[in-house]
Amino acid sequence: MALAGVLYFWVVMQNLSTKTFKNEFVDAFPGDLTGDRKPRQTPGVLYSKALPTPVAKPALLAWSYELANELGIQDPNEQDVEVLGGNLVTPSMQPYAACYAGHQFGNWAGQLGDGRAITLAEWETPEGKSWELQLKGPGPTAYSRRADGRAVLRSSVREYLMSEAMYYLGVPTTRALALVTTGDKVVRDMFYDGRPAYEPGAIVMRVAPSFLRFGSFEMLAARNEKENLQNLINWTIDKHYPHLTGEDRVLNWFSEVVERTATMVVEWLRVGFVHGVMNTDNMSVLGLTIDYGPYSFLDNYDPDFTPNTTDLPGKRYAFGRQASIAYWNLSCLANAIAPVIPEVPKLEERLQFFEDTYWAKFYEMMGNKLGLDQVREADVALVAEFEKALTSIQPDMTIFYQLLIELPLDMEGEADVEKHFQDSFYDELQPADRTGLYKLIQQYQARLKTNTCTREESVAKMRKSNPRFILRNYLLHLAIQELEKGENTLFLKLQQAMKDPYSKRFDEFFEIRPGWATQQAGCSMLSCSS
Ligand code: AMP
Ligand code: MG
Image 1 (spheres, rainbow, N blue to C red):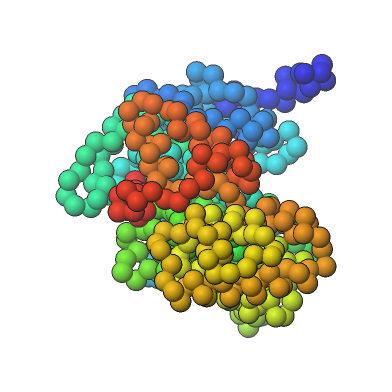
Image 2: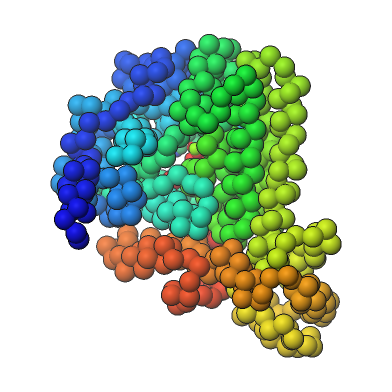
């Protein structure tokens, strides 16, 4: 490293345990400062002071070097690991659990709050950006209700890896800086069948400019705390949407939340991500993917798939419903902020922009996935044909699109087309599907020939839009099983692969979900119990 580089690192890189932190959220709003962890309603405040409960023996399992570098955070020493485990709170930290509410599975759930998350403080980067540092699983808070405020290794590994994987896929998301095991055991009834068992405990340190949710605003509206609501909206705009100024800025802010949320969902659809718990308390007001629980990537293309066992039988949060649920959730946010908007019909208008915004982004994304130079009117029908064929055949989504990139433009005959896509099929094709796929591919090839860009440009677009490596649930399941036995080979491999999801470097994982994983708990569907 050149001398200037060494000096830069020396001057600006700082340790978690010695940094002087900011606490702007705490400073700006009323909070319950008693530190009392008895579960309770906390009217009038936006947070409750909460200290992490110390753990037996924090040990670092993973650290996001690139993210740490970006934020100016020095590799963790022993004291830093104590911070990550919740055993050390430094003098400039003012840890708190945020108070928020939410609609869960379509029903108003009232106050929820950070039951197993504590924000330690805000880290300011050398460039002056600030990031909330939050521990997930640090013990009880005023919002833990009857639960323990802890997280198990299995769910922590899933949150850590997946939030980072989404970042490298280019999907807006919260990030994960570190993962520690706690040395403590946590009891979980993983299958909700009355057979609780001990599992290793863990804590993720996750980071985001803010973890404010739609539910943060819903809480204040439900309690009729108009001044707090107005202040929270102003603060959110000032701090996180500073480019919005002028008379209509609250309306413009809402429009931008609508737009960011539409972008986020379109990005989920691009990579085949199903969130699984799109409750309004799990919707970031910054348009970030947040709260990784029983999520999944699609293996076989089934728009009706929900990975969350709690979401059965209604499948409210199935892959193909995510856009309409996002709209529903945005309408909850609109209702929450309506009390401070002088002209509510204008807010309603901004909400209705969701549909056009979403479809415009959706077709642009599909055009890129399919390698089209631009999306023309007639392409809408082509996209619909793809949707129909994929839903019927249910090939592996990721592998199908990879094979589509490599499709020869002059491929003829049903048998050849079937053979080309063979590696993406979970089942043998029905005769009608075989013909349907053939016709679709003919139509697609004809369309590609009308592209005004070169084949190379079209392929480059496809390579950028279609991931080749995805963190499939069964891979995570295998990595977690290994980790529970003290072995980290697969975990480390996945950690590398997720950083390079569009390349062929990790083609050892380029295959459809194996048969054994179809019915195995944790490999396809998951419970919320974590
Ligand atoms: P989630 O579905 O994970 O977003 O959680 C919904 C609500 O339940 C949030 O208020 C969480 O803080 C709370 N919660 C979930 N698990 C726990 C736990 N183990 N201890 C305390 N609160 C929890
Ligand atoms: Mg949540």
